[in-house]
Amino acid sequence: MRILIVEDNAVSRRMLEATLASWGHETQSATDGLDAWEALKAEAPPDVVILDWIMPGLDGLDVCRLAKDSSRGLAVYLIMLTSLGSRRHIEMAREAGVDDYLTKPLDPGELKMRLRSAERIVGLTTELRAARDELSLLRQQLQGPTDVVADAQHAQPQVEPQARAV
Image 1 (cartoon, one colour):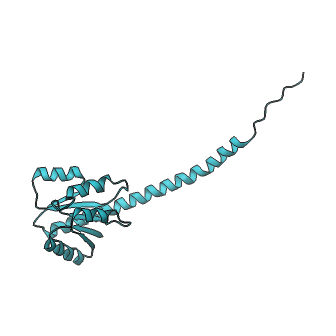
Image 2 (tube, rainbow, N blue to C red):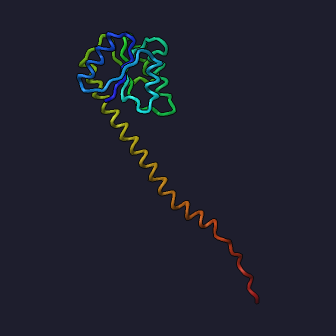
Image 3 (tube, rainbow, N blue to C red):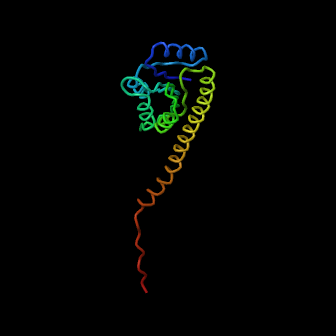
């Protein structure tokens, strides 16, 4: 999977990059929320974003809100990885659109399990979007011939019935 790591702490970011790469994931990194948002707006956005909450510029919650409210309908899976672990923080993150929540220090085994779930959900979302697009195309194709027939019927001259002579 393509994973964007958004972490302002260089040591944490590099450790996460190395771990994910060793598991076969393609990684990209951003050091703040603004860079993350730019990466999400790219032509081929990542499948998963692992992001810290507290960062310079846009914080993690802001990035999540932007991603979920985007008119592009981003199908990105968002994992918040932060030292903030209270129930209220988790609720705030969920309200902002976070799909999963992990606290620091990171347990690599826990992250690996969450990424398996993310991969399954991203795959199903991709399949669903492809099916929706195919149905939309089929609907357009089916509507095409009926529109031609309807246009032809409207284009035919109307013939007034002739009065019969008695």
